[in-house]
Amino acid sequence: EVVLTQSPGTLSLSPGERATLSCRASQSVSSSYLAWYQQKPGQAPRLLIYGASSRATGIPDRFSGSGSGTDLTLTISRLEPEDFAVYYCQQYGGSPKYSFGQGTKLEIK
Amino acid sequence: QVLLQESGPGLVKPSETLSLTCTVSNYSISSGYSWGWIRQPPGKGLEWIGNIYHSGNTDYNPSLKSRVTISVDTSKNQFSLKLSSVTAADTAVYYCARAGFDYWGQGALVTVSS
Image (cartoon, rainbow over all chains, first blue to last red; front, side, top):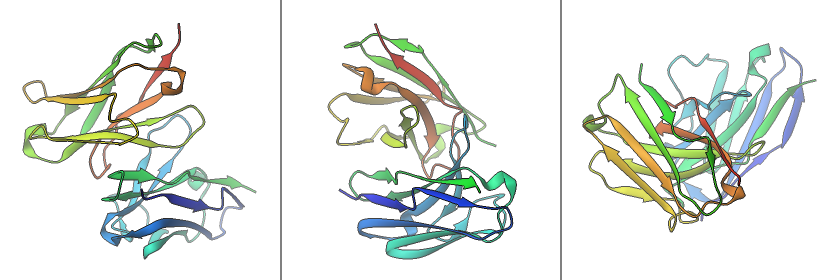
């Protein structure tokens, strides 16, 4: 079973700062099958990054993804007020076929 | 823009079967992709339930496999979820999504309670 562990659980930052969110897999996953999502209260998750580093349609370039194997990183270069939300990493192809990390809450400091 | 909309009862009794349907607009399910269900208990994270391909083949989360059935009706451009023998632990917002999870429904809250 592929388990994704995200850190930190909560990240407190101010608008304009840089955010770095981490995701570690319990076993190596192809970078082609790693993704990041943003979820705001009362909304469905929104795909931000797929293939570990490709931005989904309409996603601002302040969002970037990197990593491979077992370690994945989401970076938000300069936080905007609308970026404060919960972020999930996700893998495809392991067992179960899809799984999500437990989430990192990005809150305003 | 692909649109997905979940529908079904918002309240299900314990031990009964939860049934939800996802209607897809602006894209024909028959054209490809797989289509999935994901759930989120209140205040918790996301759990993948399963996917169905336009061919009808399915993949299920092993933790739910014994209780889950996902089916597709290409004539109605819909796919459906059935989860049997529900308990309070199955209370969640249920989302349908296109695989790749680039398009999601708005979610449907299903509460399991007598």
